[in-house]
Image 1: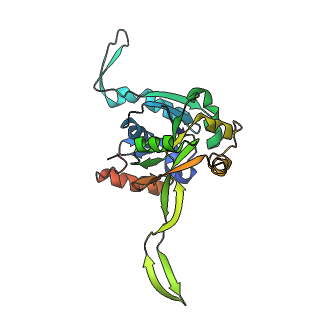
Image 2 (image 1 turned 45 degrees about the vertical axis):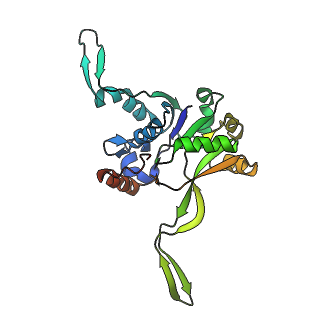
Image 3 (image 1 turned 60 degrees about the vertical axis):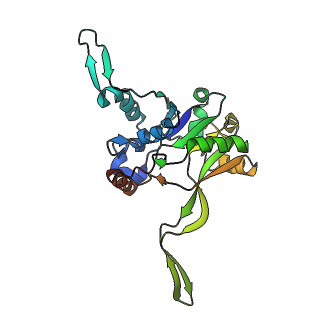
Length: 254
């Protein structure tokens, strides 16, 4: 099964990083976010990736074109130019698809239809990490028998919440759950999803397509109670790097 990763956004909320590189190449430790995402899937045996490129997509191509020799020792025959990598090489097959600079998420997926083929596939964002169990997610999707499954995350308020009665605080709780479930990415999609998408650049997966799927009762939600982090801002990059530096790589599945 193919794993499709949305890697085309401009990441305007983390301009400290994305002026020079696309957001999926922002570093966690010495590796980019997209590498960490691919490692999550690799641990479950998924090694066939399709990267949907847009903003500075050539930088992502360059990273993976140079990946093996930059991350391993190697022997080079100067006469022939032949290079033999010393060490374990990744088993990844990666298809790089240029889907347009300003294309929205739904249209990026639609434009990659011929590369994905007429089969079910995984989909995630190039800026989110989680220890979601991919095998359990896939099993849930198959059991529900719907066109689409997304991973649902119980939302927490980023601020402390107060219960107030006549101007007096009766209780205070820091970052409590709001009861809402938000889209955490990590989708499983059947090929019928393409009927909900438009190739025209303005189709946003998270708007009409998901609304229509929900209305048609074709959207199942796999609730994930473990670690999940969206890396939307430079502050998020610093937070996730702090975890990495402490050895708390919480997105590595247990």
